[in-house]
Image (cartoon, rainbow, N blue to C red; front, side, top):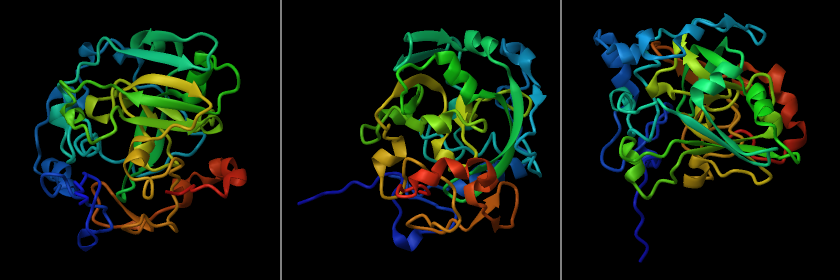
Length: 324
């Protein structure tokens, strides 16, 4: 007899909703309201959560960075308090109010390992790396597969500049990135049914696109722990689950990486994960989205509004599962 244990991403059809609410292994996640309710109630957040204690971060002098609006400046920008208290970060829990648990993560020292098809594999500390690459600010749309969205000012450097710094060799086809694995703090990693560590990847032409970004800051300050400190991927034309957080490993390879969500449910979460309102998730529509802090749903845009910049990447990939 086959006994199936439900996972955190599974949802019975009777409970499917446009917001993509999903069933926790132990309880129904009260995800879509926790962070917003706390904000509406005027919750006094710790200084570390707001990232305004500049003395605590040796890179704080790099922010606010010069703004780069080459790809537009969408508006209105989401109020800061919402994105920093409403987060998906499964290493710390399956609800949205993980910001408290994330404060336990120590992000100094932090080492990134570069491996695979590069001229020479190496390891580098985050503070050394950020000193070598130009920091700028970009305002990007962010679209979650659960159908909530936000507009936020990220600071950091282009993925292209990071790739060039790593000096790939032998024409690798993909770059794979992994999150820190530290179950003593990231306690959900103790669950053996999840494919830890969180893994994500891009094709090399995606990684080298000027839009692709490595965020080290948010709202003109060093990025806070619950949003992926000290560095995370931001690919604004893809669903947010592509944005791997707390990166410790970068590998250049010819083998397509199997991402975290793809490993869990590949019929729902694909490698490419490009935003398309005309392609529904198997359990809910992607035609509209609900911005954080708003009571109104708005139409979702193809490629999250960045189609003029990135659609050409997929001209020769139309046979692929590009949109989910």
